[in-house]
Image 1: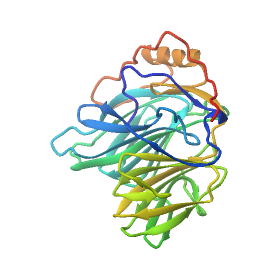
Image 2: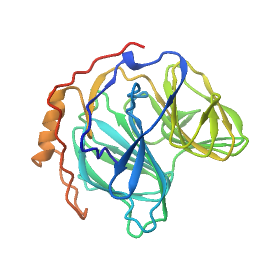
Image 3: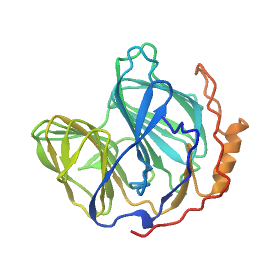
Image 4: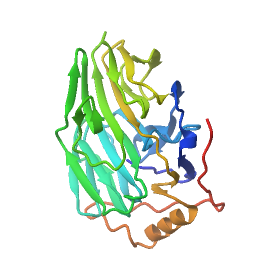
Length: 321
């Protein structure tokens, strides 16, 4: 799933000026965005006042949706550059196609990781037939300058390492948690983990004090560092933590997102992450003229047309907190 907004606003992201260097509890409310014919997402990043968490630059939460009599997810071919996409499901299936020739069905708690590098295009759709429910998250990771022009590629990891304790089952999606490391390729110090908590669990999760963190609620009701967190909301936690208290009032699903603060300043618009307005404008032109991003074969439908860009250039700049 990607940004299908027909009037996307350029976002200034990254840079240490956006980072809170101490522990905080900043509750982020989602923006509701319609995706395709039958899917609505709750967009948590970028958010007013909070653009990134480490290298995590985009977070959508969707479902659980009953799509038994609906087409489900239908995202036509569209371009990406300068980022990785992370597909993460709790229920349902998503069929991924891309311009490198990848064709893969991603299922619950399997990692679908696409590295756009210099340029890629892909589509995402619910298979036919498909499961009744669709529930998951789509996330982007910004690539640092040294690696943002790598060759595009797709990875599928059906088995991922887990960390278990009383009442907690954590699946390591990206990076490392408590000594367990994901096989997914990363380009910055980062962590992404799926946390399944049983009702009544009280525990503390080990953290890296140099990372900034956020927790996304997928299901159930849990308290994160004492803050009630309901599904579709996200709590930004800042830096400087060595552990994170968790308490589950019911069976609950959470996603832990974190990483070293992203030093570089970025411009993000539509499905592109770049370093300048001119770079983004060139990417839009390349997609519109059918160059650079390749072709997605096998999708039954036309590719997405690029929306119009705003006329005023937007330059990266920091913000002091």
